[in-house]
Image (cartoon, rainbow, N blue to C red; front, side, top):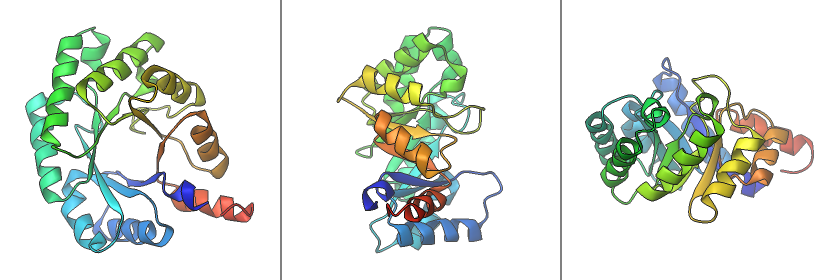
Length: 221
């Protein structure tokens, strides 16, 4: 199931993640040939050194996990992450502004981050556990309009997580214009496969090794 490994962003975003943890994350990404490691922006340069010479990409989160920072703060963090070696940016949508119906603010905020990321793809995290059905659809549409490469379900920090229903809704809403990343609560092979079947293009998980181990035990990896 090498194709499954290539969909996984091997993730470590805990506030107490130490250098040794990042080293292990990167070593596992190389061993299992994951698509990327996903880290906080302060760890991007370190991960870049560890992954030098490999094909593993680095995804950095910005405006994480709340999405409530000023646009200027998100833009600056995004600039720094790209400078330090980030290949992809996972940024949190301005959740409260989205809920208030401030579509112009949300769109402007997202466009600014996409611009700051230069040519690197941006994944917009909607935090589905906090949104209504209509807000999820609106968030997806604004992300597409802003030029995002992906819409993403969750940070994993606000309760809830990816669901089959939300992945399907995202896929239906963005069609082929944008990709879908399922993230939050994906801890085993069955869940990972179900998310991909529902329409996810990428999986964000800290359990990538366990997922591939589970597939191997079933003779699928």
